[in-house]
Length: 254
Image (cartoon, rainbow, N blue to C red; front, side):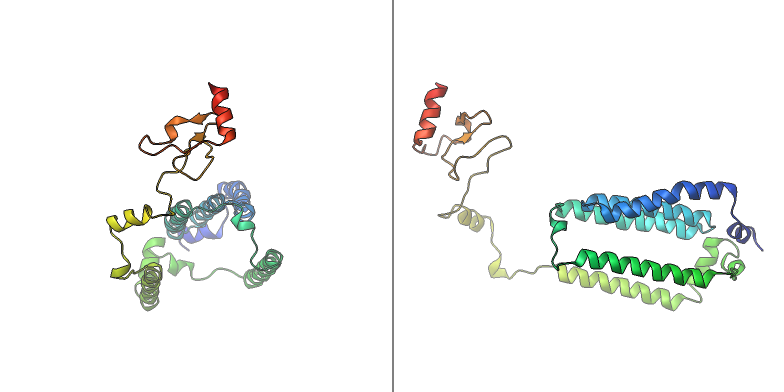
């Protein structure tokens, strides 16, 4: 029995302490991922769980799968999810809309049932059994043995998986790509003309802290204290006649 096999078959004091420290954190991240209403917060909770799982793999004499868990899944895939979520933007109110009535209750029931079925299957499969084949899997080192098996006995499955991933990537690019016809493309001149066409709103919207009283660019905006802002209307535009309320406010200000 090699040193790595003996290490995997025994539980040291440091490993036990690490497990009891990180196991609650992993469960906390899992529950936080499910219960968080913000999609970004949910992804961050999942990152915590994945980091804990990566450390567990390293403690179980599996440095390759542990580093893969941390570098690939946590460092690459989850960061990509976070980038997409922050780029697209998701509000917490969007996640509260149920397309199908009762889907949350059904999802919780199915999730608990699947977890119970999976847990019972793993328990029955591992009860009273002893691990075999660890010597061959870790011969010459964990990473070296995995590389040898991956590129010899399982090279066809590895190449097939790579082909499937490339096909899925190309398919996603084709589905997300929007090809416009040449006659539908508008240059800068056409975009400017459509923006200033009758009925459109060419002016910028009011900035933060400014309350617009009308959708017209010639209408002065209202400041937080109720005064009308003269700087909100360009000098080149004709000033619209003020309403009776606005005239009263102007007279009060003077």
